[in-house]
Image: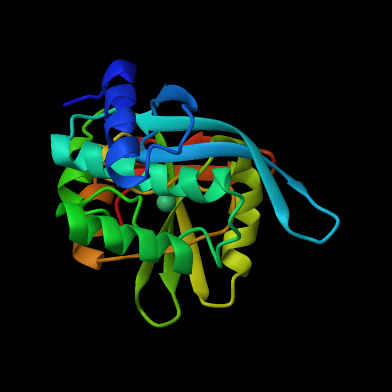
Length: 230
Ligand SMILES: [Zn+2]
């Protein structure tokens, strides 16, 4: 299913009574097109004089980008409701999925036979379900230990990452590619020089049809197709 605002609101009200003592006021609801998260509670925070945070302006977001099983959508709503409960009550947890979060999550899972997890990440199956073709700027790093790493650059950071990635101590060599293979949809686009480890055979299979990128000074272009082979 792809949830609607009405569905999310209805489940919110149901779970509010069932799991949160009916104590949560209705936040603003929003559908999201995000591929990188299933749900999110956006908020503003201001620092109090004692150093603790004050949270306000909550927006409850659920992704309706891809088709998901209904129980996954429900667990996502519950996951975000726990965040919202903690923020709304100004509880200061040890981290975003800290001690308070996990205690509430485990209690709800046990009592209502749910499968809420701390992970916002899609399962492998869900990542493979994302088959939309979009352009990815890919850096393949040959690491000193013989492994390969991959970075999908945000377009605005291409030049910076082109400079930064080879300077990382574990990196031996970098090569840049452009590809619309949906396989690469599963990697988060990054603004920083972050390298994901990747299986060599898996990478080779998908990079085979990519076009190599060439840079000269402040120009980057796609290599002619016959120059991409090694
Ligand atoms: Zn969370």
